[in-house]
Length: 226
Ligand SMILES: Nc1nc2c(ncn2[C@@H]2O[C@H](COP(=O)(O)OP(=O)(O)O)[C@@H](O)[C@H]2O)c(=O)[nH]1
Ligand SMILES: [Mg+2]
Image (tube, rainbow, N blue to C red):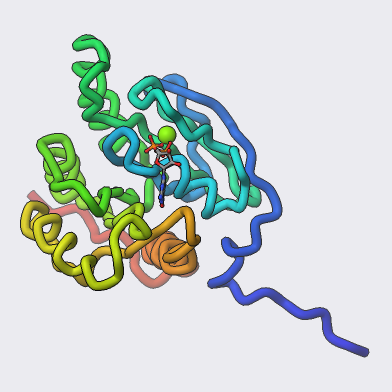
């Protein structure tokens, strides 16, 4: 008998069978019940977040790309293959957003990062032509403080020539304190970097998974005799 071929675990996410919108929420009461491992996407308005997610899940418009940035002020949850949740976080930094909306952004994101137990990593996007600003650095600080694995991605790589790339990356690396090598270069237009982003997402999920036998081999220490 011919054996049924099996898909190696590490490439399952590359085979997108289904991608479905679950819900939008502003606060924990509206999040879907925790269950599946979750990866969130964050970045300045217009950085290319929706485009990145659409390329990852091979859908033209699962997530709406926008000509009026700054309007999405909710967290949007998507179920991928029934095995993974992607969360599109509200963008920031768009000048024409009302002050009240701007003020709500910080607590909304911070609360999600603090409370969401199933969150495995945040993909943080930077436009190759822009120097990171206050909100980008604030977000990086929170991720470090909370110990949330961060996957830095440079978007719109097609907007500069290959030999301009290093020069464009230098100020971004300097402002964030990250190494140039930490960034994955991505282009939604060319689909460049798609597989690398998926690999990093899968690594983060694998790293966050407790070992199957963790409870047996690593029992909780007895309480201190005090
Ligand atoms: N050339 C180029 N344009 C892009 C790329 N990614 C996004 N864009 C464009 O940038 C604009 C904002 O993209 P969108 O995904 O809506 O950004 P978001 O606000 O971060 O979700 C749109 O006009 C996109 O077509 C890319 O990789 N290359
Ligand atoms: Mg968007």
